[in-house]
Length: 265
Ligand SMILES: [Zn+2]
Image (tube, rainbow, N blue to C red; front, side):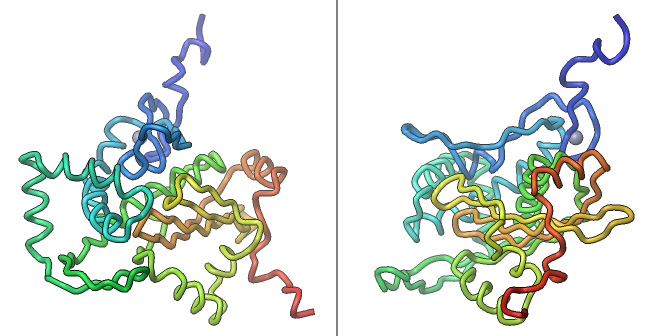
């Protein structure tokens, strides 16, 4: 036999991280580091095809973010804190982990933190996060979610990401609403796609049509990863077939900035 039927299944698989064919390895989203399997739980992670090398480029940043948020999640007694914290403790007890921890703590300061529920004030070490590394993780998750939803490859440089501490979200929403920020306009619509992967791991996103020739779509996305919150916007161009599929599934809305609000009528 000749032609495509001879290709292995992997050879026909697109890697969502580089956009090339030949992906044979599996990646899980949200990453297992943030959504571990624990007895009695059955996390519904997405499984996407990747090249091993492409995926490995993110391992160190994912570990970094896990080490960063595990103590915070524990402090605020978040639902996933236990398993994430145990995994972080085990990793940090190894020689490489000890080096990571001392590097992370080298720029830390002692600070008082008030528990918002109990009102109790406790001492903690405050670390200034490396925003580039943290954002790399958010960007990767966003590209995977978009690929899963739309089958469209999104190049890294078309994804704009800002991360905030989770407790700032309500204020961000309020301010965004007040100033008519298109990001929040989009995400606060009822028809957003919303997936809860765990009680404290969730993704909300909306796809809007930004341009016709060529078709340009924008994904507005919010990723909640325990104590981290990512605001993400990404632009990408589907081919005609991909766009038709998305439109038929009702997944693409006209740009909300061009829509008439019910209270404007
Ligand atoms: Zn790849």
